[in-house]
Length: 264
View 1 (tube, rainbow, N blue to C red):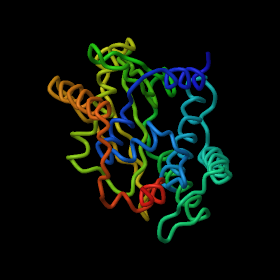
View 2 (cartoon, rainbow, N blue to C red; view 1 turned 90 degrees about the vertical axis):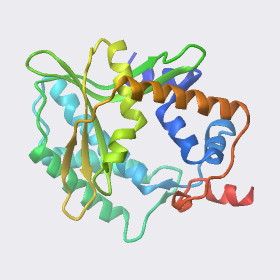
View 3 (cartoon, rainbow, N blue to C red; view 1 turned 45 degrees about the vertical axis):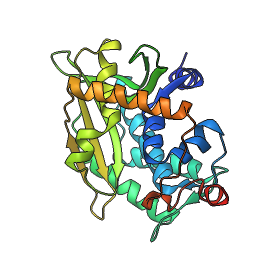
View 4 (tube, helix red, strand yellow; view 1 turned 135 degrees about the vertical axis):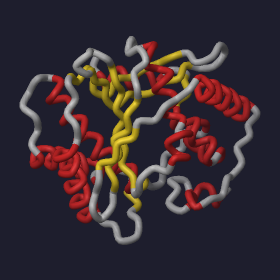
């Protein structure tokens, strides 16, 4: 079974994920539209499409390293990104661009970001897996937690590490770094995958005028894990109770379900 098929199989089963839990916390009504009503999205934010294209390019870079093939050049990396971005543009779901954004301007930005990555990213001693799916039990009575680790590596001492690729308009705040549930989930998943106490590293490529590659090495404690499980349990209780209120915020601007939400 290849990675894509394994991921599809995992997500087809009854499960929870960091993205679904996070979505409910941001807007329960949007959660209902996506996961309960399973409504098709009206638009797709450019940030999501762009991030997917960058991720595909980075995955291609590390797949070549894993296979022992020559490292992709900066130009080859840019080509993978351009091809992925064009596929995103051909999607049936229209991409919603922000102010001062266009398909061409984001191509230029992506190429510059990946050039920075190619020039400055530390090469791992060994690439173990690219896009490793996982499914773990986090508490009795809860659905399995599923997800995908972007990259699993080993150092010279054969110790494992997990690397997560991110793109963002700016650097992460300490608050985001300390409370991001996805990082807690990855810390929980590592022992179940035979990775031991693998640390999680964030490789953030900034979408700034002068792109930068920022490295974060967050830590997680048992208290963080307990809080994650408590939050997951609370979200599922709210879902079972049918509590799907609309949480108005700046995120309403560009929401994929904006027209449906206004219509009630």
